[in-house]
Image (cartoon, rainbow, N blue to C red; front, side, top):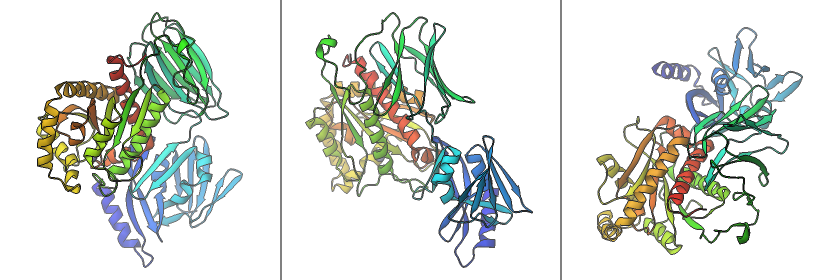
Length: 500
Ligand SMILES: [Zn+2]
C-alpha cells in the first residue's frame, strides 16, 4: 500500500502541469465484490484508468508494447488494440472512437474511463461499467443474459426464479433423484454463486458460468422430491418450484407471478389468511444524511436504494403488502416513522441503515431489536448514533428515551418477538451475503421503540470500511442483502403461521 502511495505521489510531482492533471486511486467493486483499488489519472477533468488495473477489473490480460506505444486488452480470446495518444481502438475488423486518447505517462498507459463506461465497450466486453463520482468508486456489473437466482420459500414449496433476456433459452432436467437443473445454452451469467438454503425443501444451489452455457444446479433436501419448471412474464423469467418431501405438485397459480390476478378462493382452501403488511423504513433522509463513508457514500442514499430492492423482492414473492416510510430523499422524524407503521397496522417493521465506526477495520452486518438495555457497549454506542437525529428534530434524546422506555416497558411481548424476528433475519442474511456476520443484538433504538409490531434495524455494512463501502455502492450487494432480509421476514411469518 505504501508503495502505491509513493508511485502516485511521484506521478503527481512529474505530471501536475498547468492543466491540473494528477494520479489518484479509486475503489473498485465487481459484481458486488470489492477488489483492490485501481490507479487513475485525471487530466482536464477527465478520468483515465490504469490499463493494468483495467485488465484485472474485467478478468482479462493487458500487454503493453512500450516501443510501438500499443496496448492490447485481451478478454475471453478477443482483443482490443489501443495506440498511445490516439482515440481509435481496433477490435478485429471493428473500430471504436474514444472521446479522449489513450494516455501514456511515466511508462504507463491509461484508458479513458468514458470509453470503458460507454456503450461500445459494454457491448464488446459484456460488462457494464459505471463511475460513481460521489463515492469515487468504479462499479462493474456483468451484463448477463441470465440473472442471478432469487429464492423464495413458501409453505411446502421453494421457488428459484431466474430472470431471462428476451432471446435466452433454457432446458430443465432432473439430476438423478436428488436434484434438478436448469441449463441456459449460450447464456451469460451475471456472476457465479453457491448458496446453502437448508429450508427443509432445497438443500443448496450452484449457479455457474461454463464455456458455452450457464448451469443452475439444485440439490433437494431428500431424494425423490417433486419439482416443475414454469415460465413467467413481466419480466420474463423461469421459476423452478421444488415441493417439500412427500408433497405432490399442486395446480395453484404461481403465487409470485407479477400481474397475474390472485388465485380464486376456491383454488385456495385455506385462502382466508389475511395478507400481512411489512413497513420498510429507509433510515435518515433529507437534511439528515446519516453516516458518510471515506469515499463520500451517504448512508441515506444507500438505505433508500436498499429499501427499494427489498420492496421489489417482497413484491416478487407476492404474499406480503409493503409500505415504505419514505421513497425519496426527505427528512422524516423518527417518531413519525413508527407512527406511520402503527397507523397502517404494520405486522412487521424493518429499518435499514449503514454502520460506521472510528476504527476503520470494523466491518460486516448486524441486526438489532429493541431492548431496555444494550447487549454490549458497542451496541449502545450504535443506538446512540442512530438516535442522535432527535437533536435535528429539536428534541432531547434523553427525555425522549425516558418516554419511550415507559412505552416499551408495557410491551415485553413485542421485545421478545422482535428478538426472534431479528435472530431469524440475521441467519437468513448471513446465508446470502459475503460480509461478516456480527450477530443479532439488542439496544435502545428510538425508531423501533414506538412500533406496535415486531421491529428490527439492519446495519447492512460499514460505510467507514473501504471494502464495505464499495459493497454498499453496488446494486448486486444491496439486492442480495434485500433477499436475505426478505427471507428473514418469510421465516418469521411462517413461524407465526401467517403464510400458507
Ligand atoms: Zn443510520
